[in-house]
Every structure is written in C-alpha cells, then in structure tokens.
Length: 148
Image (tube, rainbow, N blue to C red; front, side, top):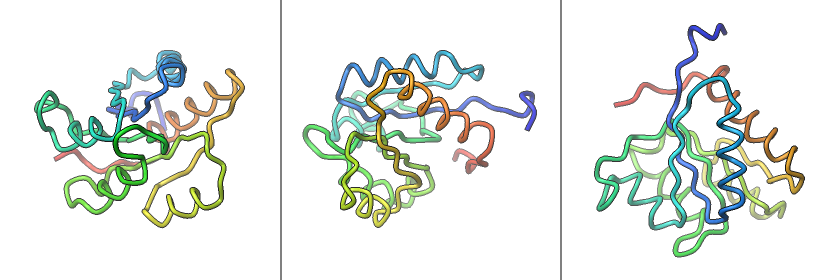
C-alpha cells in the first residue's frame, strides 16, 4: 500500500506504567504516519474514554486499543470483555500488550476476543520495535472499519 493511501489512526493506550507509556510514545513518534495516541492509566479511565463519560465526554473513538492486562481499578481482562461485548465498541481491534507470558492469560485474552496478544519485550530496542510493528500493521496492512 502506498503512503498516499495511509491514513493516521487514533490509538488508545491503556497502560499504568509510565516507562512503558514513554517507550510507546517514542515508538509512535518515530513512525512516519502521524497517529494520535491517547493514554488511559487505569481500567476505569479506559472505560470512561471509550464510553465518552466525565472528563472524556469529547474523546474520539479509537481505531485501535493497546491494552495492558495488569491495571489498577479494573484489569485489562475486564476492559477487553466490556469492549468486545458492547455493540458500539466491539469492532475496535484490541491488541493485548503486556508483560505476562502466562498461557492462561493468552488463552483467556483470545477467548475474550482479543485481536492479538503481544508479550512486552524487556529490551528497550525490542519493545520499540514491537510497538512499531503493531502500529505499522494496523496502519498499512489492516483495513479498519469506518468510524461512526
């Protein structure tokens, strides 16, 4: 696909670790497409953003969600279940991006209809590369549903 056909997307990163948030921002900044990255730092804030409640009443509908599993308040599994069971949200691709490599977390995430499961690399460069590959895939390869 040519760069002319590539449209920036809106991404919601649900991440409570400031270091991982910073690495994700850095990975996005190095990409040639100017995607918009919004961050929710716990499960409740993620749901407020997605349902456009409270401080997030004017939040854009994300085209992609990058979701950590281990979050304060509500964990990522609860967020994933809510997103995939809600008519207005279920078409948004969700990539679980987490430190857990536990088979039970992988199986449960896919059972809850995660679109992909990526274990966060501990190496700085590998982490940046993994996020860039996710970003590239959803911007240049995948056809996302039209926003409503």
